[in-house]
Amino acid sequence: MTSTLAEKAVVGRRIVHDHQARKAQLPGIITRVDNDGEYPGVWVRLDGERHNMFVPRKFFWRLTFLDEVVPVPDLPMGRFHPTADDFGGDWEGVPVLQCESEDIVILTGDQLRATVALHAFCKDMGIDREYLPAMQPRWAVFEWEPEDAEYPWTVRWDAAEGEDQAIRIYFLPA
Image 1 (cartoon, rainbow, N blue to C red):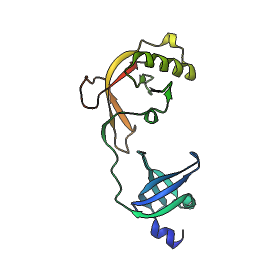
Image 2 (cartoon, one colour):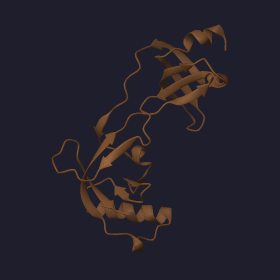
Image 3 (cartoon, rainbow, N blue to C red):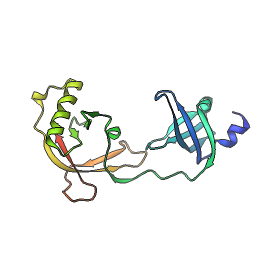
Image 4 (tube, rainbow, N blue to C red):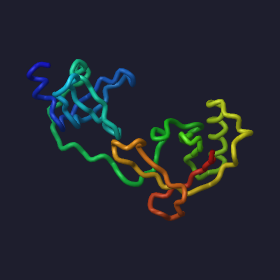
């Protein structure tokens, strides 16, 4: 790494990452610098993401170091309304998630839209709807977890209507 890059690789430096997988130039910020050890590099959080990715020194060519150095923003924490990105996709315009527990969560309070989305999801995933339990309307609260948690967010199924950030969903327990 040249001395110029060494000087620029500092916590808080704004960057643009040439993200090959997404085929895009994505802005972000350096959150940590690892100069020690076998694999020196920087940790980068892309704007809008909740996790850091490691960029080894040998891949610094994928980073454009911008002039701006700012305090690293805290990760969003607390309750939130999830999106299709948080669920990993949507079917017929409705976010649907199958949890590790095999519970299925449909992020809408509209029963017809939930039914259509569930049908499309099951078809895509090869799930036989005949063996699924009935959809249950629920109020749920989603909450971000710390960055080093096993899962990025958790959900409480026992929320009540009117509770802070409660959202109407349909739920199919495993």
